[in-house]
Image (tube, rainbow, N blue to C red):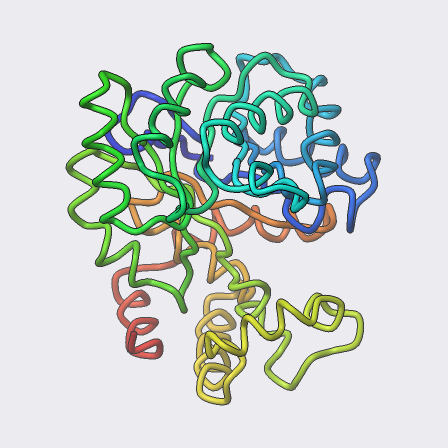
Length: 320
């Protein structure tokens, strides 16, 4: 396992992280996820990611239970604030009220004094950036989080937040958490280019398998019991992005041929491809079993098989 700096900053993360969306408390029980977390930790994974919205706070609670098994200085944990409830406007978004109250509630569920990274889970056009930065200043000042970052923000929004943070004399966002995979490349490889120098952001990317599309399981349709059958909203989302189109599935068939020639699986190829980008600090894995985690971890070995020539072949297939 390689450990990478978060951009220009001093914090180090394992190149693979373990996420908790859709799995912790939903697809895995406490006993199952404890096995998965320990397997990941034993393999060198020291970065664990969650959010207040994941399974209505249950993911944070369960992760907190398992993290008790480890020394606090031996891992990095992050959470994300934006969505909690819908009863009032103050239960969602990035108002100073929700940032502070959401952070306190997350720490209570995690049973931690602080998280290493707090992300603003989405941009909030209804809240002035000055107010968002004021909320971040309070959270950092009270020691509830050591660093902060953004998730699915635009380069322009991150640049504005950076400027205002510096004007207030606080640390700017050090990390962005975008979707990044073979089918989603624009932000990481083009839009964010100016941000790698200033403010020097790192990336903790999610969805390396494009919600399972890059496993090849949907080449011949939606199999019974699959994630897309159980979550119709996710299927609709992927259809809108073109991930389930005939053309995309044709590309995935060609990618599988490359994986077969390298004697690795398609998921390992997809994860290894993300890891080849030096801008990526850590790729967040989402697994629902120990067996799936084991396969994904083998992408570390697969990474060494992705020569410059293989990467060019992949680019020719993707043509994106």
